[in-house]
Image 1: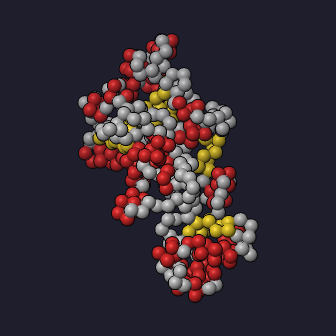
Image 2: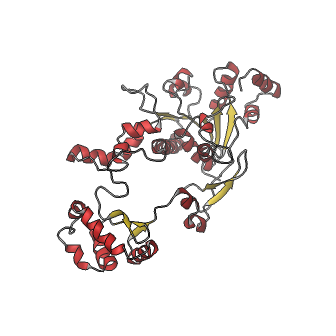
Image 3: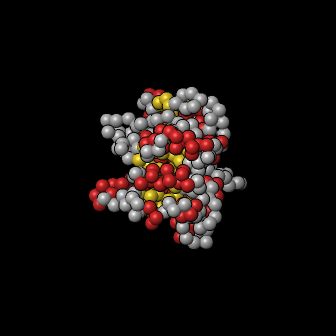
Length: 391
C-alpha cells in the first residue's frame, strides 16, 4: 500500500508552487483531483511547448493527477466542487489573494462541513501585512527575499535559473500537509496549513541575512565559489575546469599533501586558516590552477578522487539528462502524455519496498465525466453542465 493510497486531494492550483506539492502526493498514491478552468485549464499548460508540443513545466508537475474542469462561478459546477470537498482529505489552493475567501473555500468555512479536512493555503506574502494584496511570482519573491542579491556575477545580480521560490514553497506545503495528516491520525481533527512564498524562501536565506545583520557583511556574489570557504569552486585545467570543494582543515591538509604534493602550503601564512585562505583567495586559486595546468580535467578529477577531495563537473542540462549515475541506479521511468510517452525521474525520496505511482499527465478535463459520475451525477446532468459551459 502506498503511503497516501485511499486519500483524496482537491487541488485548485496553477503554475508551480501548489502543483509540485500535489504531484508528490500523487506519487505517494493520493487521488489528486486537479480542478481546472474549462477550455484553457491551468495557465502553466501554455508556458512552452518543448516536450512533443506540450509544456515542460506541466509535464514535470502534474503526472498522476486527474483533471476535472469546473467553472466554479456556475452554481452546478460549484455544487460539484462542494461535493468533492466534502469527501476529500486535503484541499490545497494557490489562487490569487482573497480568491479562496470569496469562493467560501477557507478553513473556517469548510471545517463545519468536513472537520477532518486539511486545508493548505499558499500565498505570496501571507494573509496580513502591507504586502497581502501584492501578486507574487517566483522572480519577485527571489528579489524581495534578497536571493537575487547574492546570486550572479560580481558585476551583475541574477535570478536563480529555476523557479526556486515556488519549489521550496511547494515542498514546505508538502511537509505541512503530511504533518497535518499525521496529527489527524492521532486526534481525528483536520487542520489549516498556511505557507507564504516569502517565508519559505526567507528560511533558505537565513545564512545571508544573519551574516549581513550581525556582521554588516552582505555575502559577495561568487558564481561558482563559496563566500566563506576556500578553495571552493571552479578551477581551470589544461582542457577545461573542475569544480572542487574543501570544508575543513583536515581536508585542506589532505589537499596540500596528496593533491598538490606540497604539504608546506598548509602552513603558509597566506593559507593557514580559513580566514587566511578567504583573504588570499586569488593567490590560492592561481597556485592551484598553475598545478592543474598540465593535466586534463579527467586527470584532475581522478587525482582528487584518489585523495578523497569532493569534486564535480560543470554539466549542461543534457549532461544531467544522460548522467551515468541516474542510468546506473535505474532512476528513469516512462510516463504517458496526450502526445506520447516521456521520461521522468523517480521522486528523490524512495521506499525500498515499493515504487512511486508515477501516473500519466492528464489532458485538460480528461477525467471530468468520470469524477462527476463518482459524486453521483448522471450522464444527462453532466451533458447539460457541459452545454451550459459549467465544465
